[in-house]
Image (cartoon, rainbow, N blue to C red; front, side, top):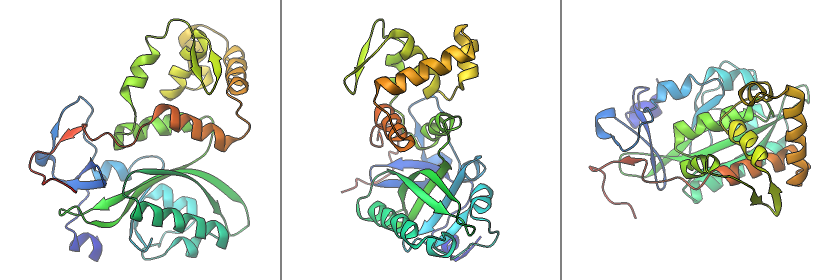
Length: 266
């Protein structure tokens, strides 16, 4: 596709493989699954209905999928940086600083990032970014995904990313099914019914879908979600996103795959 792909022998058939220091792209026959989730190829990653991308270490675009190109309003973006398509220098600098943090503190990160369009309108994104590693476990760039922060689509996005990047703590998901009375989150007591609603919300269900599943009206579910928000002391959309991520996710779990042929990493 381009010189970066050729240099690092990247193809869209390679599998996204999570390592302690970031993400590697490997052949499917090199990965030994230890769980039932399907493998995600780079092609499938790029076909997702949210922004997915690869950048080099200077934050220059190597590949942005169709969704990402629509977001920034450009078809030709190869070699450009955030300073070329984010029309607020401060917002662009913040995104670049986030990328530097990903490169200097190798692990998966999440950020809330602002994108300002040419007309001055702004969109806020939840972005997951991780170092992209070569076959010697050296950092060669950044692989990431972003979506506009929307209360209706955000849970689905987070759940999808959990399946792709191995982010979700399945023990937490399973624990939702075992809660019989109340639990304590951020000094707020949530009832059993609150937990049931949150369980479906984390799995990407809308208020309407939750209402159907638990035989309540949509209005009732929306009111309960508002009550939960008040219990948790959530005032802003950004706080909600951070609480969802902090409550449902851990740092990259390294036991998702067994890569027996890989050398030990320092």
